[in-house]
Image (cartoon, rainbow, N blue to C red; front, side):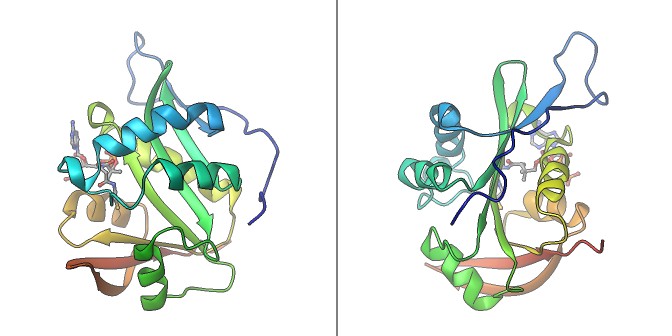
Amino acid sequence: MRAKSAAPIRHTRYSVTFSSHQSEPVVSLATLKDVDEIVRLIEANSADHGGHISPEFGRATIEGLLERSAIILTVRIGARLAGVLFSTDKEFQFTPSVSAMLRAWPGRSSAYVYGPVCIDERDRGKGLLAKLFDELKKRLPGREAVLFIERKNETSLRAHLRLGMRVVAEFSHRGKDFLVLHFVEEL
Ligand SMILES: CC(C)(COP(=O)(O)OP(=O)(O)OC[C@H]1O[C@@H](n2cnc3c(N)ncnc32)[C@H](O)[C@@H]1OP(=O)(O)O)[C@@H](O)C(=O)NCCC(=O)NCCS
């Protein structure tokens, strides 16, 4: 898979929900320099540590995605990594669960795989997910996003329904039940 855009992202500044003594969140395109922090955030939220992110999604996969120029967005508050959102062309089925999802809902030929997404526990409920997704939509206009959420991850399901995503299918993988959601932007 090749880069969809090599142009440096224009840093977007936001002015809501953060008081004047806090840095505002800044969304950027991830680079290999971000990998250690991204891996730490993902590992802290993996199912191995009581979270919802599949342990299939580890350092090797993350580095592979960065090297393939997948669009990976970070959001930082000051110097600190507060969240990350992955997106990849669907041809690159980077984990068995992604393949299982695409069997359940292949999506349009130009669809992309959205996720995983992870916001640091300290920064949840501040709308950072919406900021990441707004930037992703700007970078992939009009393309269908396809994602899966474990059925019992109700917080994530609610947060993604709020973004305008819709449940379109379901599947089971390694004993867990997942919902498939998609998002199609009418341009
Ligand atoms: C799912 C997730 C990405 C949502 O991101 P977010 O930026 O917090 O999204 P929102 O701002 O829309 O808020 C989501 C919810 O968190 C709640 N929340 C507020 N403060 C919170 C806190 N300190 N800790 C946890 N949740 C909090 C919000 O009230 C909202 O809940 P509601 O739906 O009941 O109203 C984030 O919770 C997360 O990273 N979870 C762990 C990893 C994960 O599950 N990823 C998704 C895999 S599909």
